[in-house]
Image (cartoon, rainbow, N blue to C red):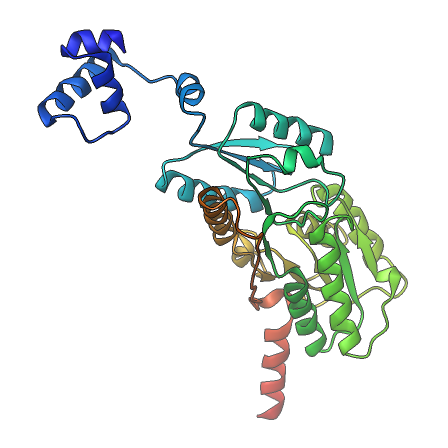
Length: 340
């Protein structure tokens, strides 16, 4: 700052006022300071500024699986909100490891970030000291039950129920489920939606048809799909609860030489970017990932502005996109032909 002040012919206090965008600086003086900053390639120290003002314009985003396509668009939504409001974003990946999650939370506290958006590896077992501090936290995509927090989710139960109900409505009665870990909101609620749909059609829940695989592991999902599809009485349709489950199921279907939807129908939770380009295109429940991130970012900024307001929970609604993989279009065409 002394170098900038010397080159611009002003005091360091004037340089500080320009850097902090204070109004009591003449336009010509401000121009000289900005020219000196540019010429000297001066960048104010974030650390020094934070120590001086006890504030920061950095948001921490802690996600559970950086390889999951779901988080790509979610992160973009958060980043757009942050950028428009003068905040930067730090991204951390826990790989579903609660110990690593704790380390990153401690780092965020050490850096005194303005706020944290967290897709937690667990619903319980969190350290109250990390969650009840002056740094606000928004829970993303998954519930955190042991600490009251602002939370943004999707309607997992309703989305899964809609997808399975559609399969039931076109005649399927033996529907296999491949879902994720039950200690996670996403895995448990999507199974709940599957079971609700079956019960409303008067069908019993068959545990043999329910398989679980790590939401991150295509190989586990493939193995579960292989076991389902080689049962003596195999299902006529599959419902997969996330993208990795879907990729694993598609791999198994291909290995067994089965045709979609003739031999096995499939409907999925989560819409992969190329779903409509597959042969046949996948029937899916897309998640509004960008809106999810945008909502989380806006919720965090609202909490920063008003730390004392009550915690809120938002669930975004989902809609089923019907394509050819469930067999509905083929059945409708057959019915239309028979009526002619």
